[in-house]
Each structure stands twice: as C-alpha cells, then as structure tokens.
Amino acid sequence: MTNSNAAAVILAAGKGTRMKSSLPKVMHAIAGRPMIGHVLASLAPLGCDPAVVVVAPGMDRVARAVAPAPTAIQAEQLGTAHAVLAARNALAGFAGDVLVLYGDSPFISTETLQRLLDRRRAADDPAVVVLGMRPDDPAEYGRLVLAGDGTLDAIVEFRDADPAQRAIDLCNSGVMAIDGRRLFDLLDQVGNANAKGEYYLTDIIAIARARGLVCAVVEAPAEELMGINSRVELAVAEALFQDRMRARAMAEGATLIDPRTVYFSHDTRLGRDVVIGPSVVFGPGVTIGDEVEIRAFCHIEGARIEDGAIIGPFARLRPGTELGPRVHIGNFVEVKNGRLGAGAKANHLAYIGDASVGAASNVGAGTIVCNYDGFDKTRTEIGAGSFIGSNSTLVSPLQIGDGAFVAAGSVITRDVPADALAVARGRQTDKPGWAGKFREYKQEMKRSSGATGKKG
Ligand code: UD1
Ligand code: MG
Picture (tube, rainbow, N blue to C red):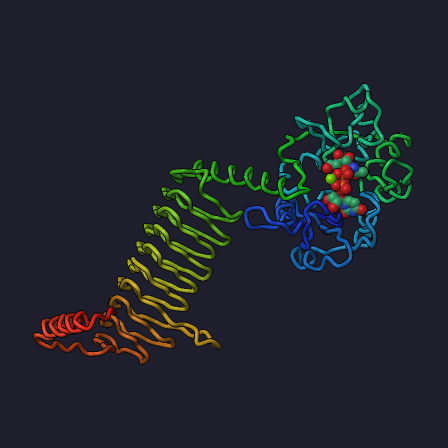
C-alpha cells in the first residue's frame, strides 16, 4: 500500500558518540534487527512515499540496510531542522503530510503515527502536530508550551528553558507530522541563535504560530518514544522488547517455562501449544509449527520447524534448517542448511551440514557429515527409512539410498545403494588368550627391573 498523501523523513545522521562504536548508532540491533529497521517496520503499514532516511557522509551501511528506502546525506550535523532540510530534494513537489521520526527511537508504533497523521488532517488544519510524552524523568527533553486552548505555542529546548518552562512535564518526543505545503517555508526561517548553536526543528512551532497557524500535540506513552544513546540504553531497550515478545508469545498460546531466559528475534513465529524450556535463544528467521517442544538450552536461527517436532536440550539449529513434522533433534546436534523429513531422528552428538535426511531415518550418535574439504561445500542426501550407525563419517558429496544401512564407525566415501549395508571400517579380529599372556609378560618385566633396582 502506498500513501501518496504522506511521506516520512527519518533522522539518522547523528554521530551517536556515546555508543563508542564504529557502527552507526541506528545500525545497533534490538532483537536481531537494527534500530532503523524497527522504525521502518512501524512506518511500513502507512505506505509513506517516499520514506527518506537522512544519514551523514560515510554511512553506507545504513543506506544498504534501509534500501529500497532512499537516503539523503546531511553533509554536516548542524541540528534537527538542518537534517530535515537535507531531504528537500527527495520531497520536491510533495504536498502531502510529512512525518519526521528519529532513527534511534525504535519503539514508535504504527497506531501512534496514524494518530499523528489523523490529527494533522483534522478540521482546524494544524501546520505541525508534535508527539508529546510525559516521562517519569523529563530530564533534558524539549518542553511543550501549550496555549490556553490546549494547542501548542512553542517548544523550548531544555538548555534554553527558564525554570518555569523546565517545570513543564509534557515533553517533545521529536516525532512530528507537518503540513508538506508549509514545511520548507517554515524550515527556511529557522536560525541557530541558541544555546547549542544548532538549527532546531522545534523552532518551527513558534514560527508557525507567529504566522497565525495552529500547532497541536498528540500524546503517547513514554516507553514507546524511548531514544537510545548508549549501550546501557540499548540493553534496557532490548530487555523491554524481549519482555513484550515473551508476553505476546504466551498470549498467542505458547508455554514459556521460564520466560525471562527465552530470547526472541523480532521475527520469531510460533504456532499453538509450543513449549519452550529455559534458556533458549532464537536468532532471526525462525518459524515453528504447532505442538513443537523446544527443550532447554537450544540456539535456533534461520530454521523452519514443523508440527510436533522435539528439539534439544542443547541443540543448535543454524540457517537453512528445515525440520518436517515430528522430527527429533537431541542434545549436541547441529544442523546447518539441512533438511530432515517427517519423523526423522538425530538424537545425540551429530553434525548434519548441507545434507538432507529422508523421512523416518535414524542418524546415530556421533554421525558427522563432512561437508567441507577446505575449499568447497558439498551435499549429502540420505534417503527415507535409512539407518546411519553411530560414529559414522559421511564424506560429501554422497547419495545414500532409501532404506540403506551404514554400519557404526564407518567412513563412507562412496554412494550407498538403496537397501544396502555399507561397512567401511577395520574388520574385528579376536586373539584368544592374548590378554592373559600380555599381563604375564608385563608382570615379569616389572619383577626383573625391580631386581636391578631400576624404576620405570
Ligand atoms: C531533540 C529535540 C528535543 C526532544 C528530543 C527527544 C530538537 C532541537 N530537540 O533533542 O526537543 O525532546 O530530541 O529525543 O530537535 N540528527 C540528525 N542531524 C543533526 C542532528 C540530529 O540527523 O544534525 C538526528 C539524530 O541522529 C537523532 C535526532 O536527530 O536521531 C535527534 O537529535 P539529538 O541530537 O539527539 O536531539 P536532542 O538534543 O536529543
Ligand atoms: Mg537525543
């Protein structure tokens, strides 16, 4: 859905010095997705076109991460008004409503943005609608100064505020909806004669009011408008987001035995009656069917798990894993780019990399698929109903037919036909009486060395 009546400008050019990072601040991840990705995801249902991300020179990683959203470069960081001006070309000829957001405030919701747009389109036709909040600690946020009728008169930055203004608890979140027909006229009036010597976006309120235009405030919960400036705040945001995802997973029908120890990715999808044990970590790209049990201490990313599977404890599922219905993956089993058909089992200590295992097959303890020769990765295909004995080494590329057996301890280097037994190991020989003779010989050696006083 596109919305030719709304565009967005996401400010992300700030240096983020407090992160002490070579990574641009908005690329730091929450639940496996960069902050800027969270903002764009909340924005997406509104269909803003364009949604321009303002970055500083050299932030190519941000440009790549947000594509196909366009970026505009703010050559120098001279303030939030100056940053919006960087999007002037991208918005040329646009006369709808412009949302301004911050790339480092990842929790803004779609509903809140929609409320801002709705207020902007109300009958009194406000030039600017500002998203306000009342945080427990208003700290150094800009303060919203209201007129007697509840409309917005001005935003005063903390450093420029007098004590009476600092006592106001209604704060500027930074997010705004602005009439696109007036935006650049207002911005062109902004100067930098203030405590920071910056071009403040917040000054457009007083400028609009001086022209007799209406400005308005919409309020949203402070948690939604949290900005992230440091690693500590990043960790706080991660914890908040994880709590929300845990609550949602349980509300949608999953059992989390110890919710505080389960870590989700932003895109984890769970079916009904999934049971997740303690200390389970989900990376990006996991989809889980109904009635799946994930036992304690599993790490799962890039995996699709179908109904009724049992995973873990201590399993590692890596990208490209596809597990059919009722598959069992047990302790210390790693699967990468591997597919197991319905009811297949690998219950102990195995590596299944670049491989497929047919339905109802059993992969014994200690089986290793040798998928890499130091240069290339190759595949092993194991048929349905086959049995791979314990401690087998399967040297890829290989085809093991349906119903085949591989004897325990084999090193398999050639294809195994369907229904065959492959044995590839040293043959066992028994030497009757050997052990007794060996013991006698050792004892005799000890006695004779004791006689000469030598110690071994
Ligand atoms: C701003 C607001 C303040 C509000 C607060 C909410 C102004 C003048 N002040 O203050 O009223 O309470 O946010 O968090 O707008 N950015 C650029 N280019 C720049 C400067 C900033 O892209 O030249 C971006 C930053 O990356 C950041 C956002 O704009 O995402 C806000 O900038 P920041 O310097 O954090 O503004 P504050 O001083 O916090
Ligand atoms: Mg800030």
